[in-house]
Length: 173
Image (cartoon, rainbow, N blue to C red):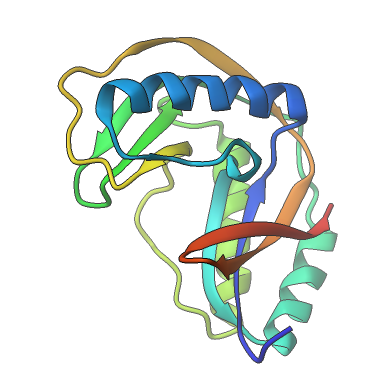
């Protein structure tokens, strides 16, 4: 591992759910353009950490190992275009999101901040990024809602590879 790895906390879908999300992504990209996120990279980010040293990573893993993660279920059924980021996302129908999910994100944020990491403070919006480099979306397509039982919190490394990123799960709790 290099001196600082690009890391994030996420929930990773099982193969069946990943396949379903991948089909939705393909269908949406067909209408909106952009670059489809590979099915193997689809996930629900909880907290992007950025560059993390080995010492910081160890402390974050210790915190994650002590978290009591309640049973969480998320329904994703709204396709949204986020023009600033130029991404197409599948977002949650649950507004506000499950309080247990928000508490988990807050605990991870506190841990990251205690390690000197700069993390976003804006309200958490659960979403799965379906496509990048999207310039437009005339009308959001309707999709059959996806219900996801969130299990197995992951610490993931974002590894640069030929101008893109490959995600590698480092730990799962």
